[in-house]
Length: 238
Image (tube, rainbow, N blue to C red):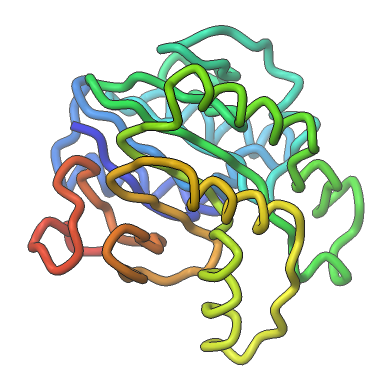
């Protein structure tokens, strides 16, 4: 089964608890909707976290968010996996790259990582913030080309950021300044053209259906195929 969760920020205990509580096996896959955080320029500390994840029986797939050490992630060799490009971090830990469509357990999943950090003025470039957090125009064009190949229809979408209208409403509800950018506008473009069942996104640290197809995810664990607003398919939060 495929599950989706939100920003893990390097908390290996979340992955370990998931195995204990829900008995995930080698047949199961977990997708992290960005801010994976286990590759953050911390050297041996990162390696210890990744080795702990490699010892788990299930597959861990993650999108990049905005709080990642992008040069280190992007330095891993690329390979093809289930129809799209990945960085293989460990045998069972894979980075799902931007603008790819993957076939996973008979389902098609579009992924688009990245987001702008609202707190970058408090971070240091090259140590806690990297400009690669924002997808390039080339990566967005690649995403469009990937969707051209599948006729602009997928089963599920997983991103870190939200489409523009959703992002603006979330910021307003939280009393935060909304800062539009090209990624939010691009995701809004996809949302208007793409056929899909449900769209999962992280970044805003909450768990709720925003409407009948958009699921903000953070600490909840959601079985992707059963996801529907109002249903009893959400596993309790860790």
